[in-house]
Length: 616
Image 1 (cartoon, one colour):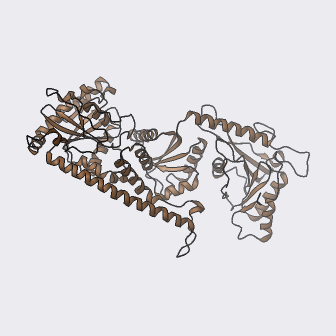
Image 2 (image 1 turned 180 degrees about the horizontal axis):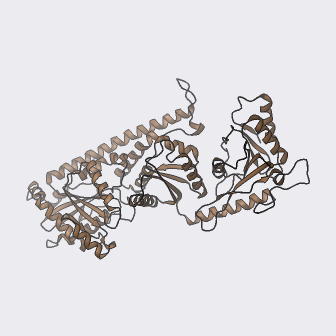
Image 3 (image 1 turned 135 degrees about the horizontal axis):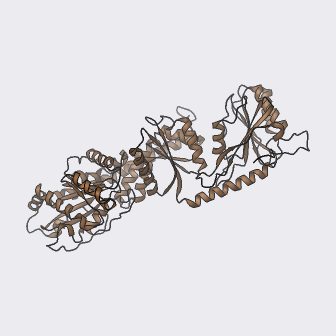
């Protein structure tokens, strides 16, 4: 084993003081004791001589692993090079430190106890009754708690009660034999670790997926905050995460450095560790500096809401076009956030020849990301040109296009499936359908309409996604009619409607005529539904997307809208009378995500009871 290392700023120490620190590293403690009385007195005396706090990392064999030199108020603990503390296990090291004033362990020290999974924290100081020790350790939670551990403090005791004296071999007390403090330190640690391992195993058995914790900044209370929380929970569920806790802080905006305030962030990180959390999710989005600061304060992985949405998109993209668009959005968002971490990517010096190997690696990663972005943009441009050609052909033949848009999980794909007898994926999840789906439906007056199902919208839709999916969203802006689907059972429907309106304006579809379609009326009571209908205007329709009969009025309204605005007449004028059905079908976009199929439609069928429609 290598010699103990003195950690801290020793530049201003005398040579005798530096040697005294080195000698502390050579001391040893009986394994059954927290610390010996002589070592505790020597440590405290040297601390007062230096007027700086001192600390010792002591392993379970009683050997001093590290001597830590702090300032008058705190210690900066070194990082551990070996991995331990997983699955409820403790670090195998206890921290004994000095206080220059008779204060109990600080919040920072207790946070370090939890973060590092230390066996024990012992704070030594001089008090009115002589040298005294404050102890704290982790402990299993009470039954029914969602925590994996809690931080437990012990009653303050005099040094003579706790520690054995090296000059008195007959005195072998390791810990105070009273209350819940056992006399054998090693036995105490074994029992404690067994309880923590059992608590961790039980919590992981109950949860499915990665255990995550959300951090949210808000400015007010009420329905809006509840809607944001529920939406974040749904995003986590869709991504396969197990959200064990959601911490909020009311403030005008995120702290520019630490997102939450420093004290709040410290408490939240301890809560995250206590619940065996593996991932932190921040809402609203993190800046690169905030992500770096939080990452340096914890070993947990830190992402934000946009990263979570991008990950959902990456899981649900199935077409080649969709996968390219998602990858482009991810790289555009992550490029400015590619930063070094720790000593592996540290900047050693400036100027030519003075850059460290970490920065060189970072520059290589950034250059490769930029090259990949350029390649994706080139490939997507080629796909866009092909879509433009198909769109131009469709305009020449005049086939009307009706785009189904709306908030995510409002029931757009279910509506498409019902009116066209399709099998587009439709689940009760956010962004269950990502790739746009195109279907063709024939109306009784012997003309065809293209139905376009687009990606769902969400509040604060990441700009990187809007930019990457701009080519797909152009289809919405050039549609002849929009069906804006709203979840009638969602209490946040007004905010969702405003979000959809705003995004339609951003993509240039603000002036496209639209019909408002309130879905999921089967979840409303009769009185509420009647009141909604009484308050609605003539362009609003109430349906249950899974029941074809409820869509009859909507389909008639689509037919009437297209005739009133002359869209059908222009379509018929654009197609010669002797044109074949195959020629008309060629005008329909070919980027449908479903397989091609066709079916005959009886001439006397009503729009509300369409036969299976053809795929584009």
